[in-house]
Amino acid sequence: MRRLRTTVTTWLPSPFLRGSALFQLAGWPLAYWAGSTLPGLTELLLMNHALITLASLWPQSPLLGPNLVRLPKAERGEIALTFDDGPDPVVTPWVLDLLDHYGATASFFCIGERARRYPDLVREIGARGHRVENHGYSHRWNFALRGVAAIREELRRAQDTLTELAVRPPVFFRAPFGIRNPWIEPLLRPLGLRLASWSRRGYDGALGDPDLVTALLLRGLRRGDIVLLHDGGCARDRNGRPVVIAVLPRLLEEAARKKLRVRSLDQALEGTRMALGSEARDRHKHARPGAKSAILNPKGDP
Image (cartoon, rainbow, N blue to C red):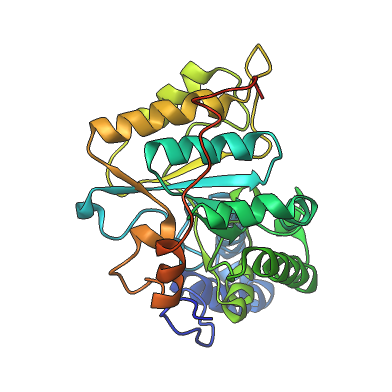
């Protein structure tokens, strides 16, 4: 099965990481042997280390390596819609029905453990014409603090699980909480994965006010945005209803008003150097239509 058209090559650290490594390797011996004649060198070395840490904590940072933050061809009038932390047995079906109703497609960054727990939902995401992508296996808070072997196993287990359930291998990875470290990129490449973050979010995973989440999400929404929402671990409003259920229709209606097409990441990248091969496109083309919308014919609130 084809993956991305781009070839997975030997990892080459980013210019920032190469420069930082050289500075650290040369700087500390100099600071030890000639510190008195080079005032401020130790402070600069510590500042460089702090900058590496800040780059790891900044989800949109380009300093640690390639990072898809916005769509490369914004002039096409598209936005990419992505969902994190699913699948969820209550929320994901509602999200899928809403997407069907509005004729939108999305990328679902699924957690491997949850995918294994709800395999039928993962298959349904693909059957409805959406994409399943890699969000790690366990989504632990300390993901970026773990060692190389542990992170490699986390990525591999998720990739194997999602490939088995979704039929096709994920081609994008999003770090849990958006936090990563300098050795994520060389671990992604052998698995055929690229890092993807986002340019717009409404904090629906934390805020229980649909109006506030909508306002944050729609303010400045423009073509080329990669939008982040949650179908897993999403906040609830005062009535216990998942915030994303109220927010998603408003987002899709605003996109329609602005004449923005809402696509999954792979669809929005068609015609670029990151486009998927014909096999993956055919799978979307022949995906069965979604079931009748539970949103239009509700049998009860989730």
